[in-house]
Length: 122
Image 1 (cartoon, rainbow, N blue to C red):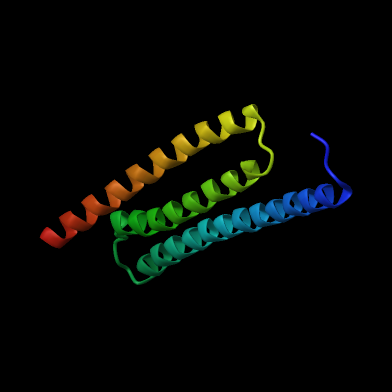
Image 2 (cartoon, rainbow, N blue to C red):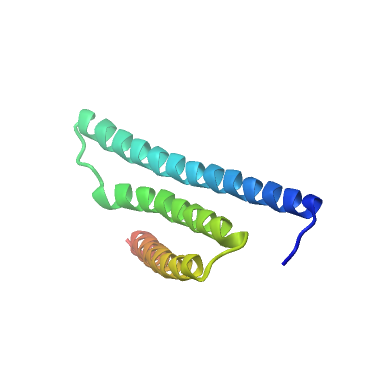
């Protein structure tokens, strides 16, 4: 399909914007994972230094919340990468990644709900 120079310029601009957005969203996801690791490790260390036994399940749940949010952001970044002129190969990879990340997120959310429910019942 023929494009005018202006159309080609706009298309290139949109592709670059999508790439920068993707990188920003991926970076946010990585920062959230890092923050979750630091928070969970800090709580564990604080409990140990105070002579308390670490509440492993609570630490896992805290970290799981960070992971769930990061998974959502990583999926958004994958969608951005295929938003502009995707190939069938990219669409197939996105589909596989989306299924895996959605399944992980589902099971994380279910585990969080179950743990919070059992904690509330106790």
